[in-house]
Amino acid sequence: MDGIEGRFVANGPVRLHVIEAGRGEPVIFVHEFAGDRRSWEPQMRRFARSHRVIAYDARGYPPSDVPEEPDAYGQEMAVDDIRAVMDGLGIDRAHLVGCSMGGFAVLHFGLTHPARALSITAIGAGYGAEPELRESFAANCEATADRILADGLEAAGRSYMNSPGRRPFATKDPRGADEAFRVFLDHSPLGAALTLRRYQARRPSLFALEDRFRTMTVPVLLIVGDTDTPAIRANLFLKEALPSAGLTVLPMTGHAANLEEPELVNRLLADFFAATEHGRWPVRDAEQAADDGDVLGMGGGR
Image (tube, rainbow, N blue to C red; front, side, top):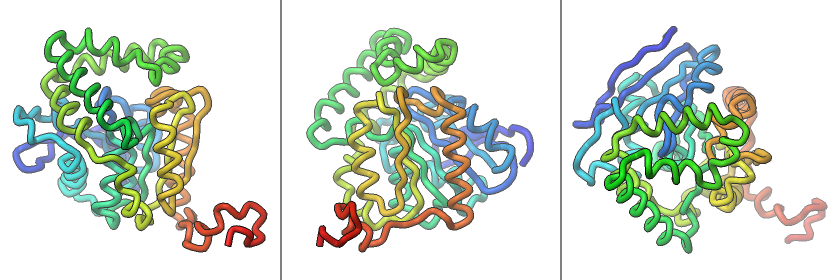
């Protein structure tokens, strides 16, 4: 489909706002906590030239519905919303690209619906994933949700958007960082708070899914900034656990790399999509995994 088209698709009683453009293999972009569909504009413009591109606002993010029931939010619902968007648009298989919270969702989608993923790209996924950090991460989510409801998005957002993982963006591109902050201010306080409490704070640890990840052969591209410290360890773990994962670490880059370094991320995505569409993205087999410690190829690790 050419041009930009906005519509709603339903997942049960919840309506999700979707935009799309272009024609070709479908690419679905899934946004982070602080963003929404607009966070993918640099990628939408680039890939609408060659692909059918779709971005949507997660539940709790207007103009998508903002359910008032806490149980309407969570990891399972986030994964099922991707499925609902695909079904609502008549898409059987798609490239899935997620940032942070969206990165968790697309990785979980790959576990749940592997046959429907042409590929998976996770950008900056990993906050709170380490088992020993789960409790403190959940407490931080609860505290941020409380502050949003008590003081409003602007007061809470200035602290959130000034976290160490966000500062490189503001240093490199002050106008872009300010625009991202204004996007955050457009959100629903209730939707943001419930997303933090019921989705972010309660999602399962990536490390707890190791056995399932080791059997997932969907092509995966992991992208993380080298100043995005809370996500680095999780990405190293995912690179080792996923048989078909490639890892790119971007220098002097923070959390939302798709906004901070859009041209670089777009080049990485273009190469990844081309490789997967032509069957040229390798899957590491059991013998290769066993040889990981054999740097000279002499069989010394066995």
